[in-house]
Length: 125
Length: 125
DNA sequence: TTCATATGTGAATAGCTAATCAGATATCTA
DNA sequence: TAGATATCTGATTAGCTATTCACATATGAA
Image (cartoon, rainbow over all chains, first blue to last red; front, side):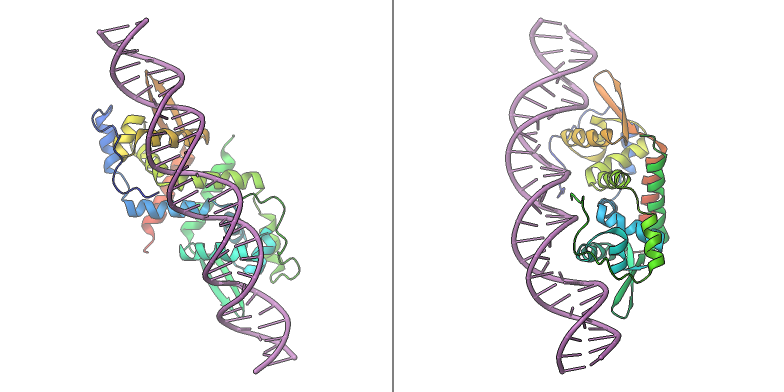
C-alpha cells in the first residue's frame, strides 16, 4: 500500500490521447484526499461495520447491546468496529449512564449509504 | 470474514429499546445484498483503483497506457485492478485494435464517486 | 465499598489481497 | 510469416486487518 515514488515500468513516453490524459492529470485527487477517501470506503467495505451503519441509518440511535441484538454480532466485535467508525468521524457517541448510544455522525454519510443502497438495488445484475 | 452462523456471546436477552431494535432488524440488508454492497466499497477502498476511477470520471474513456500515464501507476497493476473493476461491473471495456479503452459502466457509479468526493470536501476536518 | 453490568482494550491468529515479476496472449505491421 | 506492441495472466510474497479471547475500565446499585 505504500506508494511513495512512482513505479518504474510506467509507460512515460507514448500517450494515445494527450488531451484526455492531461485532463485526468489535472483532476487527480491529492494524495491526502485520496487517502481519506479510500479509508472511508474501506470502512464501509466490511460486513460487520456495514450492518452497524445501516442499523443506525434506520434506528437513529442505538446502544452497543441493541446493536448486537439487531445485527446478531458479538458485542466485542461491535466495540472494535465502532472505535474505527468513531475515530474516522463516521459515527458519534452519547453516554447515558453505563451505556453508550451511537448514531451516524452527519448527513453526508447518510446520503452515501443511501445512494449506495439505491445503486445496488437499481442494478439489474 | 466468514460469518455464517451468528456468534454465541451475543446479548440475546436484554434489549434497551425494543422498538428501535425491531426497526433495525426489519431493515437489515439481506446477506447477499450486503455482500454486494461491501464488495463495491472494498473495490473503491484501494488507492490504485480509486485513482483509475476518478481518472475515468474526468477523462471519460482511456486506454491502459493512458491510465498509466495519468495516474503514474505501472501498467501491470492497472491491468490487475481493471480486471476486478470489470468483473464487478464498475467499468466497461471497448477494444480498438490492440488497445483496450475503459470507461465507467454507469451513472450510479459516477454519482457514488461524486457524492463521496463532495462528502470529503465539505467535511471541515 | 463491593458487586454486577455495559463497554472498551490489547495481543495473537488466520485470512485476504495488493504489488511484483516472469511470461502468455492478441493484434498490428513489415 | 516474424517481430513488435498493448494488454493480460498466474504465482509468490509481504502487509494489512477482522476476529477471538482474556482482561481492563467505568458506571450504577446495594
